[in-house]
Image 1: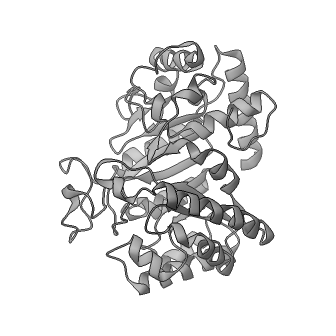
Image 2: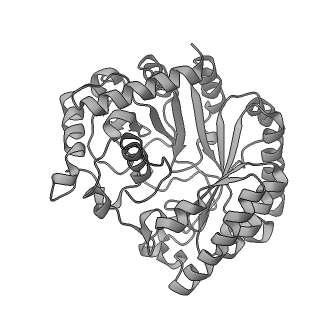
Length: 378
């Protein structure tokens, strides 16, 4: 069966399960694997590796992780392969490769990328691109994967402000890599720009940079930050200036055939206010559907419903993924998520008041209610 057809069938089966409320007819549509806490740069707004964080003040060793250093820095390769194969057997199509560092630094990343290609899955890679040399670029150019490059800048001057340990040569090399992958035509390529004090005046250059490289998709996100990182959040005057730029740039990107989420950003700022996510008012109106469509795994193979949930469903290697997905505990999560609009409090163990997965739930809600699929207030 063609991968895209299998993906559509999986989506239809997931929706049937949601409508039926008591069924799960397929595995998760997407799984996210946090395979690396290692990073080779230090973006100023990063939750783990920013030089503004006291615990990361010494960044001379960029292999350091942002959490408990006693834990492994990479997901075990055998564990990673087990999750890939078991999720594929359940019908999962997309595998998001991520972490608190750069997943491409995993020592067996390229082999796992090839394995997912053989299994007709779609890897979705979040990377800064710094680890890609010419040999690796050729390998990636032949992969039917989606590579989203975390750039956060449209010119070298801004890039150096965002990446204090970066160099001009790195920016130029990543730009060449992106252009070569776009030219190859096989992988999908997009850019990610997290907007904050160091780059909010750079949005027009970000779109121009994408046009020069041939990139046709850009995702913009407002920075999420508090505590030591609160200093990177825009003030009201800066936010007002940014909104004017976004309105102009939305039209500019459309004229150049570049897809963006700028209309969504302008509509609701992705539910982020003053650097903090605020989504509880949303979940007083719509349910959470993640229990039918998504699952998350940390470096040790622990399965949770999403990044901000502390509900442990089990651990791969100790239990089969299918058994965890169909377990009473997962069913309790699905039931509680469906009942969110009738609850007076968030799901126990979840951060429904600061949900990073809100747009997925909105899209499912809108689809079920025959509304626009774009992320907007329900």
